[in-house]
Image 1: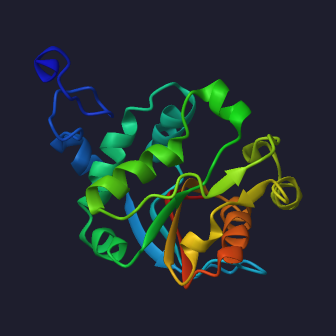
Image 2: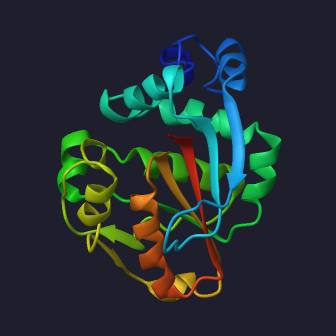
Amino acid sequence: MIDMLFPQVCGICGRINKDGLCNKCKIKLEGLVENSIIDTDLESKYFNELIYIFKYEGFIRNLILDYKFHEKPYMYISIVAFILKNKKIFEKLQNYDEIIPVPISKKRMKERGYNQSLLIAKKISKDVKIPLQANCLVKTKNIIEQSKLNKEQRKQNIQNVYELENREILNNKQILLIDDIYTTGSTVNECAKILQQGEPKKVDVLVLAKD
């Protein structure tokens, strides 16, 4: 009855589609895929590989900003549907023991109403059947948005704002850390640094787009 009254639509264009991603939008996204797994050149890097789907530009940039800032949390269904149709990424996901989203502060959560990375992580966890640890990595401070700062300012801004709880869960595990955008790497690198306190086997990072 709910499906009849409120049918699932493609979160990108609004067309009715039971999978949350219509074929027209799927084809458009396929034409923009970068689909790369790289070892970044960060100094003092605390994670192993960076996995990203798109370049952060044009249509993709607008799509992510729409999802993140314009009260469109439902778009995560379309985003994950596309990610999981990518054979290379889907096979890569099978390697992980735990999924952890980059957290946001309580203040930011109250303002926005949702954590965009958590929604994506939850859906991947459910569909790929990898445990989600949403309360392991905690953001304890509300800071200036990273997008408003330069590279050096981002490094300083993000320090000492995360804490690790239930660290024994991570011991000797392969961890996938999920965020939306990779620009300088400061945020995910700081999160990975804190996750290393739990002595995981490895930490990789998955983002939607790389700047």
